[in-house]
Image: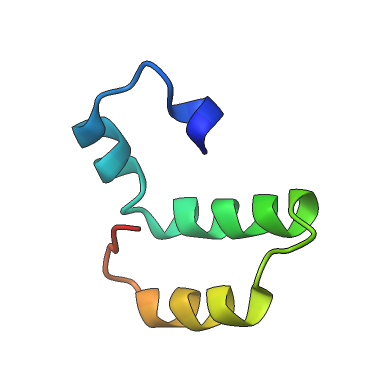
Length: 56
């Protein structure tokens, strides 16, 4: 996420991370690229996100 967010304002990043689709994308990216990704913890967080926007 750090590499992809360079050059954007904090408010732009904050708004981007509120999208449930973004949370889903970040989880998928982490599963593919991070061997230490905590899937159980992420799934709990994701399930709490519901349809309302959440900021990471």
